[in-house]
Length: 227
Image (cartoon, rainbow, N blue to C red; front, side, top):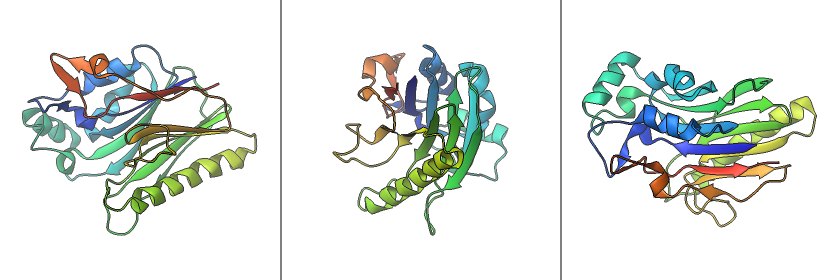
């Protein structure tokens, strides 16, 4: 089973350009038929288009709402993607599953605390696996903040696994906003697997996500083959 994770950076490129490439990113990440695709930093207007663009089944979790209607947020972002960001477009995560995948549960939980920007983890249970997707707080000066959010994310996954008492493997993917030698990724994007055999974490090279001379997103997709 191939599990892929990518922070889409709201469709922006690196270096920054004058348009967003969300459809191109989703189509690229799903083109070879991964079993699971975890996405972070999605504007809210894109949630209703993920299944069409990917051919997969989508489950989303809204982290940041906005008073701006989603169609207007889309128009403003298309007009000026550098100026109109998550305060206008909102922000969400999504787990996309290969067609026909049996889903037993989908659950969401807030993992940030206090007055911090709202961050969420969500998880799905499929036969033999519980898979979580998280975008933790960006606080490199205080790594205890994302670490606490990751513990809450793990608690959600563990609770779903124990609920069914079937010895499910547990997987947490996403943008952890944390560099740690005990984590599999060389940067801040990771896929952590427990309870199942798996291969090494693979990080996409820049050339694999280059489009019209620009690199899609400021994050590289990461993936792991499980089982």
